[in-house]
Amino acid sequence: MLDDPGLYGPRRPLPLRVRPVPGESTGSFVNRLAHANGLSLAAFLDRVGQGEASAYTERVEKYPQSTEMYMNEAGLRYLAVLADRAAGLLQQDLPSLGAEHLLPGEEAAQWWWRWEPVAGHLVRYCPLCADALGVGQTVWLMSPDSWQVCLRHGYWSDDSRGRGPDFVQLAELPETVTAHQVRQQLAERWGLAGEELFADAFQVAVYWWTRMPDTVCWVRRAWTAGLDAREMRAAPLVIYSEAAELAHAMVDFERAGRRDTADRSRWLAGVEQLMAGWGVDVTEGRQALLMWLGRHRRGVPAPSGPAGGNGLLLGAGHNRIASRTGPVSQRSCLTWQLGMAAADM
Image (tube, rainbow, N blue to C red; front, side, top):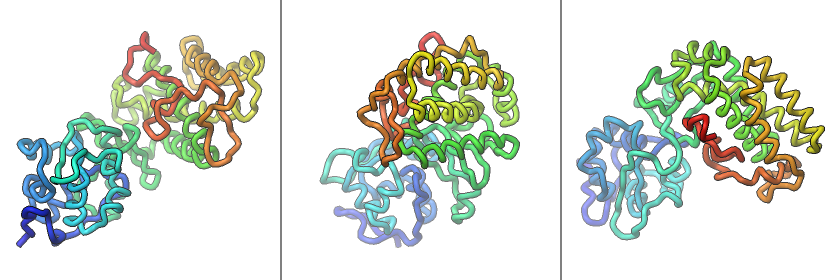
């Protein structure tokens, strides 16, 4: 017989253990733990405490890609008992259990399902990685970006929530795989500076795609992926390659440290040659590059310059970023968002 939580919470773990996937959403993990033990979500939640959305547990259970679970410290302790896993380890694996996301209230265990996560995006975990871990159910990750790339199996997944294919196989899009490798290499070599310059390059490419979604190379990639070339879901996938190449050019600009008018003009001319090779209209796309150069024209290091002693100090205007741990749109000094109208950028 399963343990009755009683007045003071559960006293014993559930019979069957489920190991969380690093980066998994709390809702995804809770669903898997409940189902592994033959419990409905509602029955499981009764063991974690009291909360909101209890009247909608069937809906929550049916649409795990659309909602995330948050709890207070007491709820975390209850979950740790049921999962037979230390609360600190759960917090390491499940981002939404981080201290900054815990609900207020220290006595009664409480939980809350939000139909939009507080931070991040619910993105499907690579199915082949899940199979390798012996996971029989769909796993949802809490991802800073609205997409994930599995280099091991060549899968692209996102937060599309049922529109079009669940995954894109990248075997026919090797340039996307290469772009993700470049992104990782920039982060490894240059730390925060590398991550933020990739974010800047990605934002420039977003500006281009918003104005020129019918650029031939982007349309071809979208069709190869089985996506509509003009749907917003396609944008990160189709512009990834150009963003990675542009990020390299931005790193070269910052490393050179030469920022006078002539140097900026030479760099701009070089990038415009790249744009022409990609088939991106130079006249239409130049403004985004000029805005980036305007933020990086002075050599005074940004106050939050890159960590790790990598020696790459970014221009003073680059400190206008929203977050150093959020999605690419918040790590960039260029503040527009994918989905904005071109006139608002």
